[in-house]
Image (cartoon, rainbow, N blue to C red; front, side):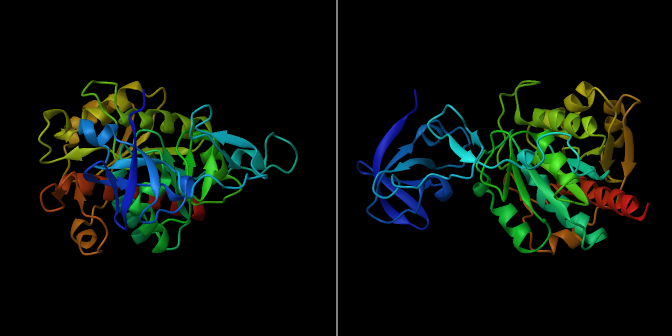
Length: 343
């Protein structure tokens, strides 16, 4: 059962909710539950914070009883997200723009697609791609694997405001982006068709689900994302997860997340890497079929950019390899996009 508790908003910014005698940090997806004001009576889900499961260190507002029950219906929507849950809500998915293969449906441009394993790779990848290919229309497709609410990512807001991403599409069970898609393949279809992106970055939102097992983790979203790109005939490139200093052996060097995806892929992809990475491990993981390519990883320039430069509490100077791998992938994505545009 859901662990829901009644509380009172004690502070609106940053949001805190008082439950009994305890004041607790909270997060509210305001697009879903409305604005929060001091004194509002709310229902919050306390499970993640109580169990210390890494859900961000806060309770999540389920409903605002004071001011969140009078929202008007959206008459233009044609589909539901989070359907048959208490958070189901209407959306207008990008797939509905051209539901069939009728005359007039846009032809797909052969754009490259960079597949991420986790959200921390997004900022360096997008920055590096724009550094090489300034002015490219590069959008982000958010998938399952991490947080579902698109509004949770401060990184996406920053990248959008600085022009490093042209759009944010939330696909599948994720929601709250600039645009909605019911499937990842539908989101990539729109990116290569009516949205006319030059390149796409696809990967999970903040945080990542995990069980410490080989297949039970959010990194598996990359497998489905790569297959979606391949099915559409798009050029798929994988950004490997690497680390110099991750305390867990399974993520040090080349992460087992990336190795598992490379092994399970049903078709070949490109794999980007920095020159200083664990290239022999990556070659073995490619199993003689995926194309490994080396790209520039301007770590010092990225560190000076002011964009997020820490991952799981480790700064860029502590875990340079993690950022170098993402930067190399972004550099490679832009190179492929420029090549396609020139060609």
